[in-house]
Length: 145
Image (cartoon, rainbow, N blue to C red):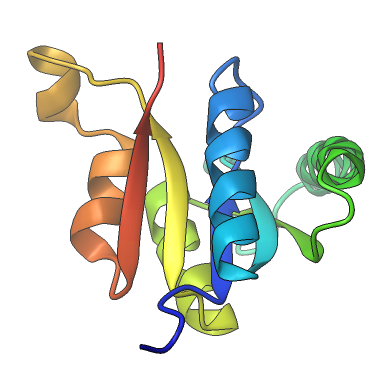
């Protein structure tokens, strides 16, 4: 039987849940000899502006957020050695960007943390729930405490 998972996309949000998500991804990558792409989505969206061109300070702030996220992802990448890893930072709505990047890189599995929200939080939607329903590949929602 061929290996079902050769490329994992691991969504990182820099929360306390990341440790559990990374550990599960490490286990799966080891079992399946899979490569890992660590992804962080910057959800900063500048306030609406009148013209089509965003103000320079908004662009600079977005770039600063992306650079900070990239630095943090590279630190996590170092922790995953000797596993084959890549890092990506994108800006947008998390659930859509996770699915888009998964398709772009040909991921077989998306690994994402799920906080198990209930009630109104569930009705408003969560990133993990959105990814689960939009993704064309398998999704592992790691239950985090």
